[in-house]
Image 1 (cartoon, rainbow, N blue to C red):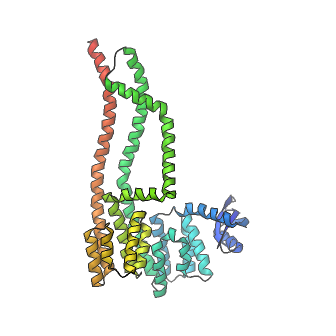
Image 2: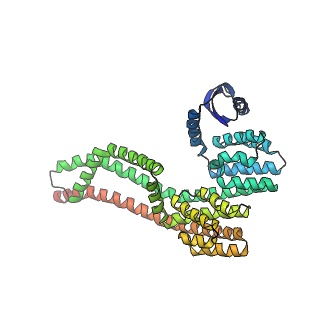
Length: 403
């Protein structure tokens, strides 16, 4: 598989440039034609250029939402279950997908299936996009002849993931809006309104109250250094993101601090348990299911602890003892694992546990929103109130003297 740079024209005659993956130049041209382009130039990239091109493509590939994946798997499941061949189904869904990343993914996967590769094998190069945990499930489905059924289950799970993530995003949206609006309003008052009122105060020729002096001082600092503060904030965020990628100790410190936040830790555990139960019920071996479930966890400390559990299991240790030693999981999780193993129904117990965590998280999120909303309004109101008070006190004092 290579990467090719192309110049082509679309159906409206517009000139397009881009990158495409294919097994050969001829395959790249054929793929472009299937997508409705008329190639003018298709050139294979060198190895160095190809690595750069893959990085560029990966920027687009990461922009895949849970709902996009749910739509893709649901359409594939519907077509395959209706008797449409896999290659035809891949082609039909690729044409209908609005998400460019998934459209390219399905086109390449279809080409590889036509070349004789298994569907699961073709998906492996795109597992970061379609989900690491799903590749093994597709492989088992191919062996058991349950591809349509498994694809429907994957689509249902992705839809549930999307609903949960939307709920979390909605819970954070209002506090974030209040914070941004508050910063904007306060900055506007300090940088624009206060300097004009200051000139009025200067005409009084009287000593100002301490709170007013403090407000004027803050206003002067903001006016003098606002551009510098904005630049410093952008540079800090950039350097911090860079350190997270380049310096492992910084990433581990951040993830360790985050794990101490109860709500965050419960969200991680819910995602892990949900992914684990789904795979075990679908027939994935326990160790592989645990490793695959880490793909939904973006926390290196949590992942390292779970990998220690995997090492413990592979050396013959009991699963519940391994999770208990990690110190990350609650007693109800350990008890569910122990009972599930003894009864031979680990997947069913984990599924119930995932449902329990989902309900508890719904309660925690609702409680969080109910507390943060008034707190955010109170903080913003207090800041604005302080500014108004600092402005009104000298005006009120002057009025008293006039009377």
